[in-house]
Length: 115
Length: 114
Image 1 (cartoon, rainbow over the protein chains, first blue to last red):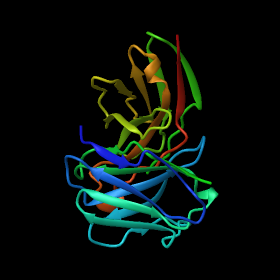
Image 2: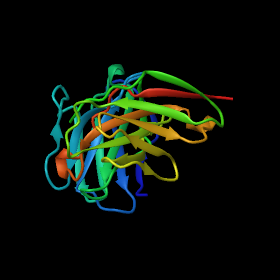
Image 3: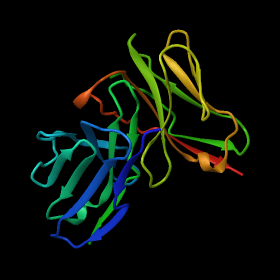
């Protein structure tokens, strides 16, 4: 099946710094990618929809100035957590569809720990 | 998208079949049933999907009741590596662009025991 790759798989950063997470579709082009967040023992929650060549769409309660999304090409979307705080520590996961009628494929996730 | 109800947890003996139920009594006629699983600290993995006929692939079988109000995911010979949270999701197929996200419930935590 199609492959979606995330990098890094884990990161530890100091409070106040910024962290960039990459999501790549390795063998297909994705005009839309999705970013989810998962806190411990909870389910995945959609944060934002990343659209190639245009602005991302954020879910209610997600700060667009804190979680910067860039989708500059058909195979790469990046999520930057700016001025990270300990409460931003979470598991971040991206997904993409190979096409409109196919199932979603997910990256392996990025474990962010802010200390 | 229609809501789904799954038991929070289930146990299964290694080598036996794992049968995971899902209720989706408000499913509409053009909504599909999708199953994903999430192994600890990994991204979700697609398993199978169906509309009204039973489906089978190399990972699992999906049995959908005639009234489509419930379904069962069957892992025919569960292994320890099948321990994961299994999500049943009901949604329209063919949604493009910004409608393509999935809405995850709490799923069923399946524990396969030796």
